[in-house]
Length: 360
Ligand code: CMC
View 1: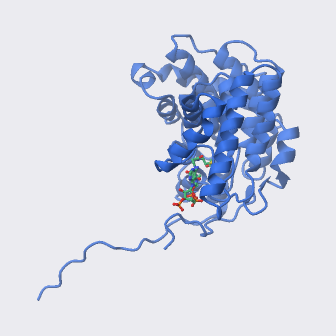
View 2 (view 1 turned 120 degrees about the vertical axis):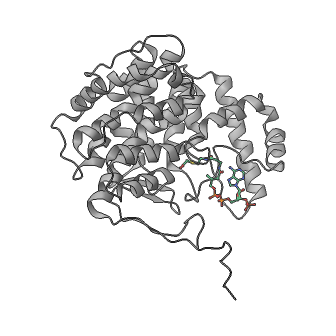
View 3 (view 1 turned 180 degrees about the vertical axis):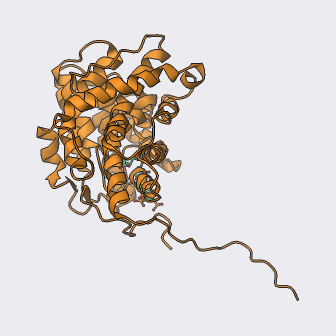
């Protein structure tokens, strides 16, 4: 029995490989380091879905059209939906999408988190939702729908880099959830909803909000070592550090660190904010090295995600929604791969409860 299934291999995939020993992430044959430098999110959508669904000749245009089509569901964001946390409100709107296993369903699912998140955040502030512009790229339109104005090259490129960075990541908890549902031959929307629910927890996609809470609590760079020492002494886990698989580096953290430095260089992140984050990172790595000398606990993707999404104007309680904007393509691709080639996923459990008494 392996309670976290650490060493259990439960699927064969051509989609991505998380090489924890080398600190490398391969997305369908290309290393993440190369992918983030050269590809648009739409390119990576095509890369992951190729062979699993018939793809339109002009995928960016088809994804733009899908954004315009799902926008009508925004009307369902009534008072009850808006009273929920953004992550739960997004789940409620995602649940409205028709289930199916075709390209149109896949593109609606990939479009939806960007459209719904922007609209929900605007409605929450009493602002009217902004309709998608099907002619724009996905990252640019996501920011335009959120802020009501075109975001400029630097911010568009930072969000694009983020979406590509998180697009897929082996058999993580949410992707496994997607594959379990797909293995029953349920449709893509059901798989994506299951995955999205798994993403919500702080041990998976919910960490970057708490990273900012930690930065706020630390307050000043000089306070970092003592604050972190106290937190770990009290049994807390430092958000944005450690990983189940990566042992030397999380390549996604490096990809986003580059994007954060570019944003800071362009003035989108205040120098004091960056200095505080770097002091906390430095102190956390030092502390974790001393406390757990046998276990490499490095900066993970969530640490720089927090700074990047904050600079792009997403509120921290919506960070998990932005993670879903990127990861949704991985979920769809894995669900198709599982449905086309996998078996029903049905592991066993060991019963450790009471047994009925045998009659004398
Ligand atoms: N802060 C303090 N101690 C830690 C941390 C941390 N961030 N991460 C691990 N440890 C300790 C842990 O308590 C354990 O101690 P002990 O042996 O005394 O019980 C030891 O290090 C080994 O932990 P592990 O078995 O390697 O950790 P895990 O595989 O159970 O957990 C993790 C991995 C990501 C859940 C964990 O590192 C953590 O809780 N990190 C903080 C939350 C976070 O940043 N989550 C986002 C993960 S990246 C997104 C993704 O890919 O899904």
